[in-house]
Image (tube, rainbow, N blue to C red):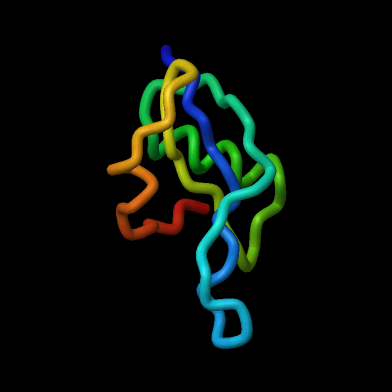
Length: 72
């Protein structure tokens, strides 16, 4: 298992077009998808969703720039 860094991706709206991240958490999981799902369920995400942006203490810019896949 790895410790994935998952953060809430907000923005992308007409009145707030810039994407940004907040509420960072380390989630221990087998995969990025599992970490995002766990984050979304734990935080009851229903409009903005968690996105995995790093692993084991390192943030990866290419993960930050990827299109978001919603995992409920």
